[in-house]
Length: 170
Image (cartoon, rainbow, N blue to C red):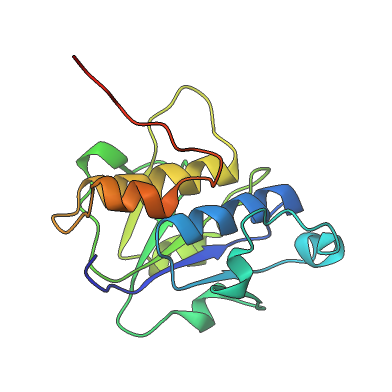
């Protein structure tokens, strides 16, 4: 896959389970780093929910303000259910992106939205949880990318060690 700088910012994530699932998604979709604000995750960090140990390859850093940690050359893409946002199916992802996600039980601050290069939302009925939203955004980025690698070798490298199943169509 072509090298791009893709980073994630989590605004005051609610639970360690969601952060662990975000880290797993970050590993699957080649995210460079994950930043988070707030105290809730820091208080619950003792619960290890990163089931694929993505933290060993991707930094997870607590910061006081996501806007002070925008990675170099990245466009700010806020992801939240806010009026005037672009529906994800209509959105074209930038090569280098800093995706900022709001908390499950709140929303991004207006000052963060105002700094964004784009604001997108997933057009669902009701809201998804944080980890599900991160997965959908990153998958959409992958699906719309011209440089997506998809073949049996990728499957062999990615699947669980207990999976040796093959398709045998007649």
